[in-house]
Image (tube, rainbow, N blue to C red):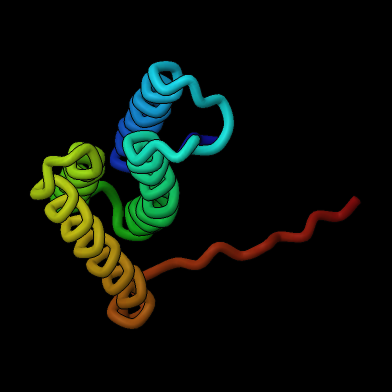
Length: 144
């Protein structure tokens, strides 16, 4: 069986994995400096770092799923690469905003919402705008 390679989905997921590690590392730095092992210890800085990481964990999975399914449905296209880059940049800007650079937070979340809305609307339109040009996956029962 030939492997199906989804380059946009793979590259974006790899970038998101690295961002997630970076966010976890940032939380760990504040935990050590504030001597807080569980919870936020009432530290606003730790709370902000924890929320930045959780915010990422809330939004990244759905975007990665949408990118992969769209790429599977329509192929690897340049605009999907661009959307993936915008999402990754947005998710890097957001934590800087949570640390106090307010434009980063605003830009990050606005771009994230635009990416999610755009991908969701596009994904929802694929079955309706393909006009019978698509193939569906059918289950094949084997004897035995």
